[in-house]
Image (tube, rainbow, N blue to C red; front, side, top):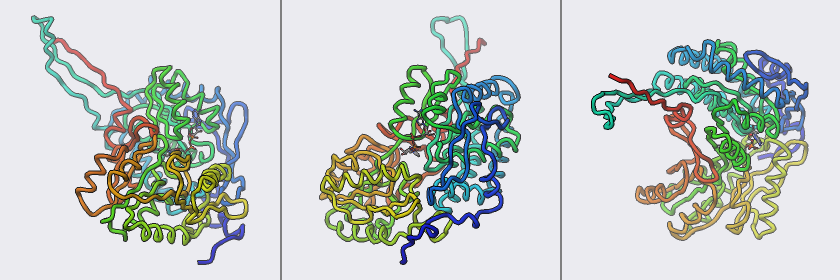
Length: 508
Ligand code: NAD
């Protein structure tokens, strides 16, 4: 393999963009409030940077408190009056299916925009941002007509002469603040939007400032399918300003936050003070355990994909690899080989196997974890170095011998950095796997059902994978324990979290 080092080979080639993506990038990006496009009141904007070359490719509006007020007011109004609350579930379902069709017709430009904005590979942005968004809307559309309550024959023992019946209704929680991170931007935006539409809530969406472009495009599509004005509002801007104003806004009924654990903690405090509903999908430090009887033909590439997929910027990335001592050398040799052979390059080039980090600033943070681990005694089995030039590239990195209490083992790095360890028996592997504050995902690779069962019961994680890692499905609730968050997205639990039960008593 010839490594690409020249600046041009590492930069996205914009001549590959479709006309739709190119004209979208060139156009003005505004806030979408109450069905209309407008600039931030103070007129300020933020740059959008292509991480393959550090170039500004667009500017977005930098919303402040007054813009957030307007968006929440619009969402409140749409929730309480107008056509939205009167719309039947079937009509909401039809709108969602139409929106899914519009996204399906724009898969390529959406994937390209995401690719240029985030640095991710085009194959990845196609599958996990654009196409998964279509599937999400179609899956959630089915829920619009299936939000049932229950009926009860009531006893009311203190009124023996009267009879009552009771029933429950699922009602929408109200105005939702959806706050999303930069690693799977469009998909995360749709994971907030789809249950909002299915349940009859309204939304103010605040995408990450680094990667807001596809959320803006999504708002354009929402306005085209006839979703009533004010139901979906998109405000772009900084977390420290627009994010804080949105989360603390008294007009918001529920905060659905996906992002880092530190910010999640602030959001939880805000929600607690105002007694708002909150769901927190936060960071992870997921273990991958390879048992001595594992099928190494799938476990070795599986362990590499677990950490290096999505450029290593994945909440459930398998960033701690525990391998039984009897197979340790063979597994590590295999994973190191995959890391060494990964062709780094721009996302628009289909031959690239890994793109840059989302930004040079984020890469510096990741590199800091690596150098600190090396200072603490770790050896570098692969990578550790950055590519020269303005792109935010970091070679896939594997560390061995890092002390278990080191920050790089305990904290989420959110980059292509793997710590590897050997273990002697299941009890040791389970103890080490559970030895962080996180609890998002965990995988066990084994050919024995008894071993798989032992681990799936012992792992402290919201999702356990057996002979696979990072697999999510729309029908399966996804969420974490402890520092990985509160609540679940997707599946029945995910959609029901956008509803509240109303109890009704009827005198007979
Ligand atoms: P982040 O917490 O810095 O930002 C997330 C969002 O919150 C952004 O939109 C940001 O603008 C906003 N924000 C920042 N400060 C805020 C504040 N004080 N109040 C309100 N909003 C604020 O996270 P990030 O760096 O964008 O994303 C990476 C993180 O997201 C990682 O920790 C990753 O594990 C996590 N993540 C979790 C999941 C999951 O489902 N558990 C999925 C994807 C990403």
